[in-house]
Length: 403
Image 1 (cartoon, rainbow, N blue to C red):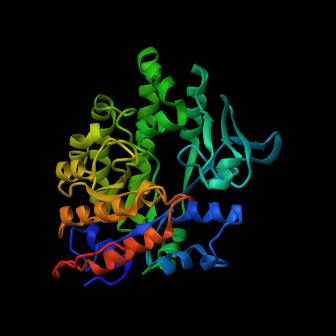
Image 2: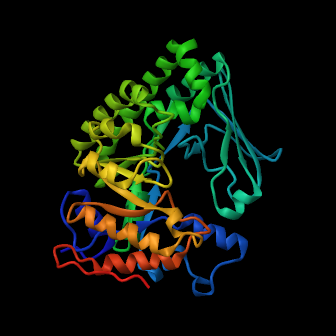
Image 3: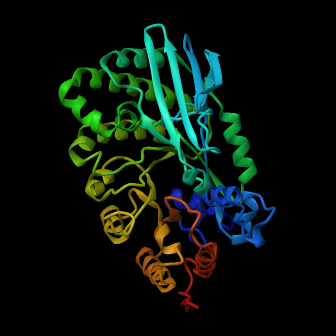
């Protein structure tokens, strides 16, 4: 019977019943927030992030990007608040989800990135407010790659000549480091439609482009699809049990019609490739997926990670649970507002008891979604961990009496 966080997660991913429901969280934002603000609670002073997880009795969920890009024939220049901080020809970068290594996350300001290709230049802009620095949140992408027709060709050139550089050893080393108390999730690029939506055009410009210049959008989607399929075939060399697309799905932006046309067949093909490698496949579904419940069930995905129920979205836990019946499996499920001091703690306990009764012995991985924020109560996380430790699967039910 599984006894560690890693083992419990693996058993749940494989459809088996662990001894207890796995509970893994991301404390990164909470930790960064309190370190930067000088408000770290005395109990956690001088602790590393892993030590805080251990003190709370919760597992650590760790995202790792298993590759880099060598941008052939491209000069990359980055400025921060107008000052140049990086310039290199044919750089090796972690360029994923529209961001990269040089976007500043520790200081308020504007990071501008320019990619000069032989057929034109591309520019992106990320902004981070002082409040964002203090809260530990990520910079916001205010300017996307494509603003005019000529940018399509420059972006196509960048990806046609980019060289995929595996970093699988780094993933395996991190797996060894967190073996037992945590679980490592290798992140892939977003699926093509989500890349174009969130990184290259932005929501409103993409919706216009689908009507005004559909051939350009379709050509870009085809290129990104071919690139991603090539990456997936490379992953045969990475012996991991689970990989994830960081798609940030939201059913109001990627509505059912768009999902059915652009996402559903893509997921099915990608999952087929990865399943032949004995890998489970998930997508980061932290938006409102209520409009997509039926389609996600048919997607081939094994996991909807960071599933964010009401009150974060319009989708209740029960609606997703009843629609999916474990296919895909829910990873997430505990909305962070329940950890706020302004929320009556009884609501958290009632929610958790209902969830446990609903799930029964079926596989699930619980996590605070989308992540633990700086204003969330770690005592409530500790209470969840304690309740789940009492909740032995396959044993008689233990009734929890809230304090």
